[in-house]
Image (tube, rainbow, N blue to C red; front, side, top):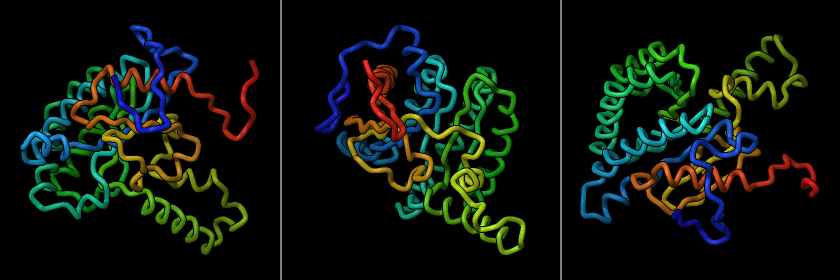
Length: 258
């Protein structure tokens, strides 16, 4: 059973065996995959061992989300702040990314999963940049689910870049400042081709966004799960769907009657 921080009461209703109720299924689930290092440290293992174990959760949750009928799954894989970690850990994370891409891309393509990336790829190693392009091309026809990997991603940098592009267009006379609204800003985001996340899940019990999808999360539901990412499994995901189903999403309106 998931353990939630105070104020979050887990629902007792079970998710049906095949999927949550279609009317309440989140179209887009985003996950901050936190706790790999702590999972390893508690077991007396090097931090990279936790990241290796976390790859298994990526595989399981990606396939399970597709089976449940989720159309978009975003995974926060590497943030712009993660460069501050020890170099050996950063290099280890890149090696794991290479391993995952080599092992999983063709399988995901066969299963109809389209891979897309958000973030700034220019700072990544050149071979990883090539892998990203190849993965997107290989899976481009997938229509069962879109897996969005946030790699070297930071939401503040994304918002700054979007506003700079709009400011440049306004300075060039292509648009007027008055025409810049929330739709115009959204169209400049890395996520312009995807719906905003309905549900954002963070594992390991921390209760913050850590510079993740700040603009897109305006009306997302949040779940902070007191379980490290390597221990987050299919049952954990289903419990999150159950809790989401029980939420009353009003988007600023009134509570539904009855």
